[in-house]
Image 1 (cartoon, chains in turn green, brown):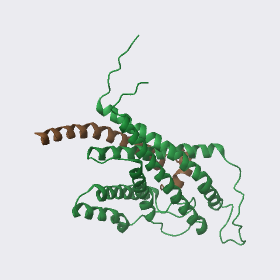
Image 2: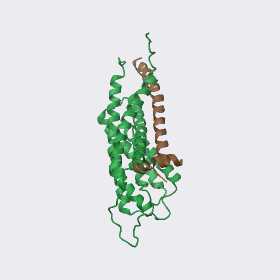
Image 3: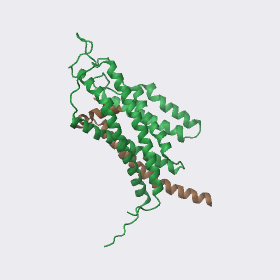
Image 4: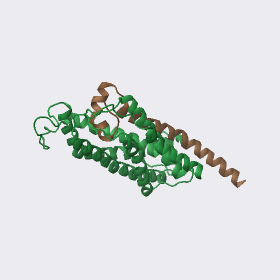
Length: 245
Length: 59
C-alpha cells in the first residue's frame, strides 16, 4: 500500500527545522553544561550546604577546615540536575534558533562561526548581565524576596537581549542609543538586595561558586551557539531537497 | 516590477518564518520558566541544584 505524504506547509517545515536544530543543540550543550556543573560547581554547592544546614559554622569557636567530606555521589539528585540543565539549555536552544531564523528573512546568513557570537550574546543576556546585579547564589547566602529577584532577573535578561539585537541589527544612532539605555537601565534601577548580610556561608565559597557558575555558563553558551549555527546551516542547506528516507 | 515581486516574496517569506519562530521561542521560554522560575515546591526541590548553578534566583 502506498501512501502519498502531503507536503508540509512552509510554516510547518520551518517550525520543524527550528525545533530540530534548537533541541539537538540545546540537549548537547545542556549535557556538557551538566557534566561541567557536576564536576566544578556541585562540590562548592554541597560544601556551602554544610554551612547552610548548620553542620559547620563560619567564624565559630573553632577553626573549620576548608577541606570537607562531601559524601557519596547522589545519583537521583544529580540525575535530576542533568535533566533540568538539559531542559534549560533546550529552552535556550529553541529561543536562539528561532531568533536566527528571523534574521535570515532579512538576509543574514547564519553559520557555525556566527553562531559562536550568538552564543556569547546569549551568555551575556541570560547570565552575565543578570549576574552583574544578582551574582549566582550559593545556597545559604542572604538575599531579597525571590519574586522580586525573579522579576528583576527576567526584566534584565529581556532588556539586555533586546539591546544586543538593536546593536547588531539596528541601524543608526536612535537604535544604538536605545540599546545603551536598555543595557544600563536595569543596573541603574538596581537589583533587589537583602536588608542585612546574615548568610552563614563563607565569602570564599560564595565567590568560588559565582565564578564557576559564570565560567561553566560561558563554556556551555559558546558551545550552544556554535552547535545551533552549525545545525541550522545544515538544516537550511538540506531544506529545499526532500529527504529520501 | 522586479522590486514589487521581491517585496511580495519576502513578505511571504517573513510570514512563513515569523509564526513558527514565535511558536518555537515561546516553547523555549516555557521550558526555562518551568525549570528555572516556577516556585512550586516539588519543582523547586528537583531543579534546585540546576537553578543555583545556572544563576536563576532560587529560594
